[in-house]
Length: 446
Image 1 (cartoon, one colour):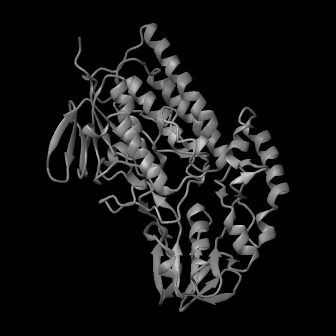
Image 2: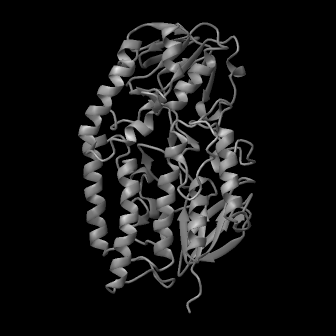
Image 3: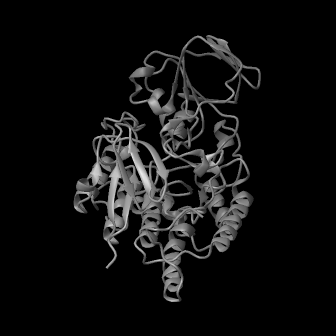
């Protein structure tokens, strides 16, 4: 019998934990490297890595029924939208339930991952170990992105990225501007509206659809999930009509019009932002034109005095331990078969390098099972040229739906993708039965 494949997993957040479980279930010998001191990654707010962006008021913006791992349902008594502390505990319990902690190397940051005859993982402390394969599961919401180039002018006040926000005390008595229209921007603007001086200003060049957490008495993503059998265009029409009847349009609250249709740009899930807007505690502003010392000038020529700016402007995709020869000029544009396998060498796999229209946990769970099926030898990939054609087709469809400038390589439709990957595993097992070549540790770079 061949020895079990040895696989390194980079990260022990949700993606890394799901990957570790899937690999162990498949009979692989797996070890996860985690910079922090406990499982959970970005959800572990007290993690020694200091990378968690989880602020005190953070709750899921997808409901628990659409967020939980299939292999580990969330407790029935939990609220529909659990808190960050709930999720940190849930991931810790997941690691405990499946015996993952003994396979995790905590306080062990990875400095380099290199390919020779085998993969070599080198930690920041200088330790090295060789593996047959590597799964990158380090997440992509930890390296803050600021406007680039920065707006012209100078600002005399305090600037912070949403990544560094924890509690609303920081806004006490200050005139606050929040830049962005994502979930974090809305949450922070609402939090600040209770402690800031005057209305909190909310600035964005482009709008988004704002979806309440409940529609017609049910979690809104469950209502959307009921439409999953429809193609996305008819689903969009039905969902936009339902949303318009329920809450109106963003423009009716003074916000900019959405840049695209629902299911094309990521909606913001919030019950509270519309309430604070209609009560004058949050005030909409257009995009920034320039910074003017103690004030900010907007694109419509108006200006407001501001003491503190929160840049809720997202994150860069950063995989610092891999050479650019593996990632290309931009990791956001890295082509992957089924958003998992590197086209040049599928013994390098990725779990979580995607942007979903829904929750992340079910996605990383099915990705992990696909990666584990291949790396354990129970699934065969299609030929390399077929993989490249499939990646090109997926990219064309993503560009048509989301556009060139919205990370189309990374975009997936939650319901379609979660349904597709089990079918892909079955297809790969059929290929294997017909004589296709499985993964073997001696595989070298193509």
